[in-house]
Every structure is written in C-alpha cells, then in structure tokens.
Amino acid sequence: MSFYECCARSLPEGSDSPSRLALSARRLGYAGIVICNSGQSPAFRPEAASAVRGMDVAWGVQIRGPNPKALRSRVASFRNRVPFIAVSASSEDLARAACEDPNVDVLIHSESARRGLGIAAARAARQNQVAIGFDLSPMIRLRGSHRIRWLRSARRNLELARKFDLSMIITASAGSHLDLRSPRDLMALAELAGFEAEEAERALRLPASLLDLNRRHWLSPGVELL
Image 1 (cartoon, rainbow, N blue to C red):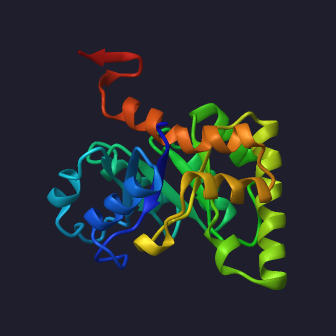
Image 2: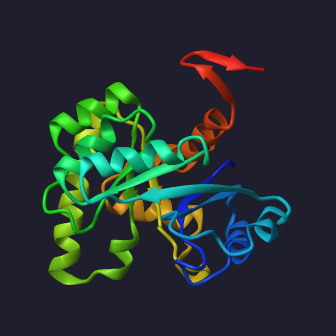
C-alpha cells in the first residue's frame, strides 16, 4: 500500500541521515518518506537516500514564519524547488495565511498554538485545497493534563476538518529513526485521537497523491506540460 510518512526531519536538523530514515521507513512498511527540514541548511547526503531501493524519497520543506508576510514569501521561494510544502503555524493569523495560499500543501497546527483551527482558516483551506496535518507525536511524548489538552485541540480541529470536508494527513514528525511508527501503529494512534479507520488510512495515502501532482509540470492552472 502507498503509505507515506511525511514531515520527517534529517541531519542537520534531526538525529539521523536521510538514508537511515528511508531504510527504517521501508522496514516498517512505508512506500515513501518525505524529508521536511526547515530549509535553513541542506540535508546530509541526499544522494544516499535516493539510492535506497523500494522507497520513494521525496524532499520537502516545513516552513515557519514570524508573520503572514514572511510566511508567504518563504512559501513562494520554495514552491518551484520542492514537491511538498508544509507550514507549521503557531497562531491563528499564520494558520489563516497558510490556508489562503494555494502553494501550501499541508498546514500542521503547532502543538504550542493557543487556539485551534478557525472557521475562516478552514473555509480558506477548502477553497485553496490545503490539507490539514495532524502531528501525532504529542500523543507519545506528553503525559497527564498536557496530553488531555492536546487531544481536545486535535479533536476540535478534526471536527472542523470534517465539517468543511478537508483533506487530512497524519504524521509522527520523526526526528530520528526511533521516532518512526509503522503505518498500523500510526493509524491506531489516529483512531485514539478521534479518527475513523478509513480517515486514518486516507490520511497516510494522501502525500503520495500530492507528490504526484506537484512533480508534474504545470504551465498554468489546469494546463500540464507533457
């Protein structure tokens, strides 16, 4: 099955090389992995990861911005360089700016965000086909009341995503091969967070569809160079 782990971080921002992450993801049953560093520095030995057989290793970027203007500028600068752009938003203004930009593939609501996804952002995400990403790593790391608060926020975002019929992605946001979880385990975590089994499965398949679309050569909206 074409399950993909997206938003993994490799050296120098993570603890492992891209090839180590790719090998571990293949062993766990993934068809592909997206390496999403912040773009501040080049990944360590990307050619080694691309040589891993049986794995589609894609290079993306996870963008953070101090304000909406800087965020949009960074997104525009990366759109023609990588086939996968994720935005991590820690405020309502940043989340709305990401959802209003059709160049963004997925919005990942930051664990530190004080408020969940807003209605205006959800409506913009629907209009611009921006997927909503659910980073499930807090469910593993957090304990007690911190985990409860995170679960409440995740479930509110999930309800809003369902209401506006938004595409969803789930990820473990792995910073090392030890952080990776198998597709089965990640779907089980998603169900604990409120996902239906079919929703969790679609969420693990969606990165493959996004990569396929973004790797094609578009001259303008709806016009492809074959």
